[in-house]
Amino acid sequence: MSQELFDIYDEQGQKIGTVPRDEVHAKGYLHHSFHCWIVRDTGQGRKILFQKRQDSKDTFPGHFDITAAGHLSAGETVADAVREVEEELGIPVRMDELTSLGVIDYYATGTAGGKTFIDREKCFVFGYLLNLPLTSYRLQEEEVAGLYETGLEDAISLFEGNIDSIPASGIHSVKEGQAESKIFDTSLSLQQFVPHKYEDYLRVFKALKEL
Picture: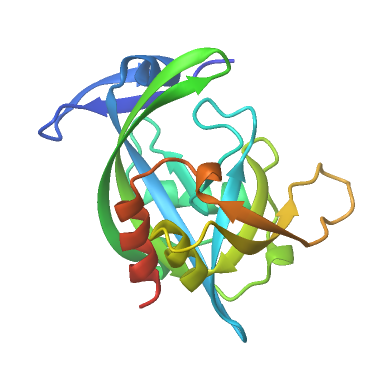
């Protein structure tokens, strides 16, 4: 199977080439990504949704992360990348339904599948107020292990260091033809999240309060 190709950029934002995904993460080339954070209003206040990354992911497997996100493939624009929401969560979304929350420069290193990676991204971040219950989502099993929601104010308290864990409800992804996943209760701690900068998480969370 041919490998996905990414456009790579210099520090001035100029495209300098197109490179296979593995090489991008092995050598730490700067590339672009799309982030979509989903929140919903409930009788218990505003909730925020996190996806759990599959254990097969090439960066931070098994960690909790943005509701839906993905790299821009070669030749794609940010508007094209809105496809990630439907691919990962089974929910069709138009770009004009999203609210821009700005751009975040991201850098992280780690090891996954026995390989060291260097992940350098310019992340185009969006928010989406969508009042759907967890059971309305159809998760992409290859990418998403589960989908979880917790109180937005709880998430802010967690990343501000005021509490050690937060209660959450979740669903697991299921194979095609299997029965619908049942909602279960759990708790989340900081160590389970992809290590974006805490201040970046908090800037996004506080912006999501205003959607």
